[in-house]
Image 1 (cartoon, one colour):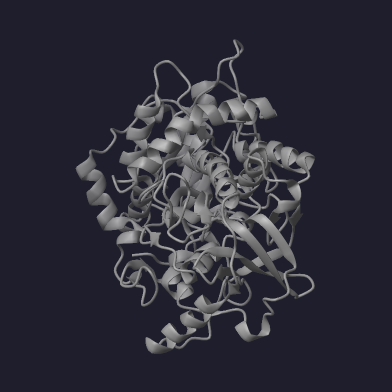
Image 2 (cartoon, helix red, strand yellow):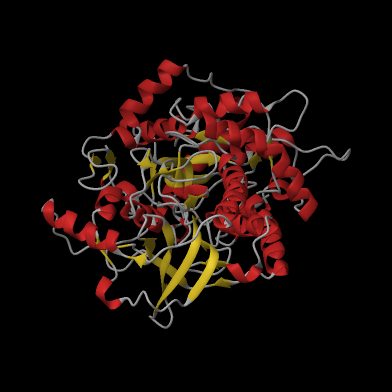
Length: 549
């Protein structure tokens, strides 16, 4: 078959080397690293360990804690609103449950709030983009759940704790893994179509850092399938929601309880007051901050809004010194730089190889380790290739999947990936694709307990905005599980809380106090937060990382 690739001429020699070495690489698998070797490679090459990329945050509940510079800068920002301009005596929305964020966690939490007895007119979900626009929809590879006789939640727990470098909150991880099989059963009841064998059993895949094959999937658009189904349930249930509406500040009552939010209509530019007995944060992560100028897999709205809102209200954060870089983001062509090449590809046989066609790392090391090794291969060993825009990348040899599993496997199991590259005349059944580590996940966030409560009364949180579930590094397939498990728990517990309490006089005193604290610490800035939308004009292009070491 003649390849129809559109790779530059300068890459052709390397592509031929990759093809020539496939037979030699078939059946060869580098030994996985020991814990000591992993720690050594992380300290030398992972971006989290680079000097000057983190600093202590100067104010708030986490004062003096180390965070990525971009996160600390965002937290130390001026509010978007002028408190004096907001009339708190005019209540525009008055509900029991306010959900901030319209991705997987928000949708699921709203459903379970209603299932738990909250009337529809007492629930309001607000989302700054369209309903469902989120990383939840973009996730590809699968969801972890111990659903086979040779697996168990206990083994899943050990894998997750080890993957997080033993920094996770144990009781949160226990809750995650114990609830996983029940979530899968709920999905199937709603109509999620998981890949299965002919006998009806789940078709399971391995993931980096897992000791068992426990990834359930729907081809390579698992997140899209799950969100499709839960959005159907949400719309059929007729839960009230507002699109293109951002929460720009949390409301408190005079007793210090979370009491709703100030909403901003991004189309009409109007502000609204939403009072609620319980508030659930489900705003997702910080991928669009482009930590250290890395590209990102994340959707357009991933600008850490929930971190800002919660932190100003006094919430405790954790693990924001750790960033998850997915080892295989697209590095070419320019139009898709940073977009995900799912780990499931490597789970089924795709191999990371250098410009000489050499397999230089086990394909399924934990994500942080795999990323660190790719960076070493690019920069210390000089075995990467340069794109026309100056970005460096390595090959992910996807055609090995068909070689190892039979012709047609790629198109059948990775139809989304096949179509994505076909748009650029690149046939992933014939040619490798160029990849580079890309920001993928916010490991830390707002600290919660196993009831999804924060330290702010009445403020609950679920999904990527939270911290404690994954520690310093998340394993593949635990993010979809995370927002399902804790979205459900947040909806149930927030509804029970809302049935018992009354909201006092509304106040934005915490915002006034924030401004006073900034002045007292001598922090002067023109930055305002939450960011709401990222900025890409001028020099802020996609393939921005020219040098790393």
